[in-house]
Length: 296
Image 1: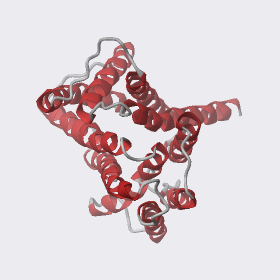
Image 2 (image 1 turned 180 degrees about the vertical axis):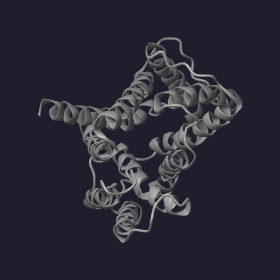
Image 3 (image 1 turned 120 degrees about the horizontal axis):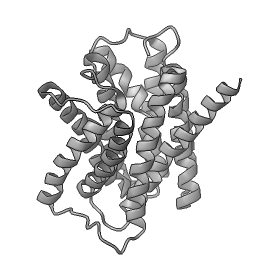
Image 4 (image 1 turned 180 degrees about the horizontal axis):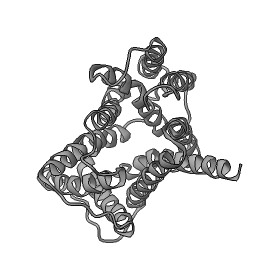
């Protein structure tokens, strides 16, 4: 019984940490920092933290040519490209809306898994995907949904991130991780991604000076990177202890906490359409979650 409560507390803590990354991203872009510069420092911080975890575990690995190609791909589709879209959208959209849009990841993963032959067709999961898309429509289409109708285009930009995240998960499921565990993959991808992001940052003039004085955006950037590293490592630990079916429930908490933190920290308020979209997203999440008898 005690172990069950420990696992439940861990699930809640991970969801709360992951959910706060969206408001922190909103703070990070609040005074003009651009996406490539933010991604570079995010990946540097993540690489340092996860490199420390890897060192403490004694889990250093050999970087072969195939692993380099794999980690480069993960860096691109798992961080550089989706985060580039997310940071740009976060500058224009409410943080809570970003959290709702990101809850599409499990739903979008289903049709990609069908194409790759990882899943069998499921009418229930198709309904879940459909509800998620209706939720997006409720955010984007009604004129009274968003604070400014001009934000609709940025909702489409925000959708880029869950598409990449859903693709990343399926690619890993299909072709594996070249003998690396999840923390090693994220450490390697963060290290390589930092190099790629540095070139993009310098080429586009988006360098962020790390020297003081520091303001709220700097705090938001550091907090987002640390929280993400903690949440991801915790999620990997939770999967190992409780299984994927239990751990995947964190999707609800990430979205829910993302909205709660946005209300408490950023004083955001939402229209009835946004709350209806949230209800549809949660229902869609429930329908697409893996069951014990399905592939997880």
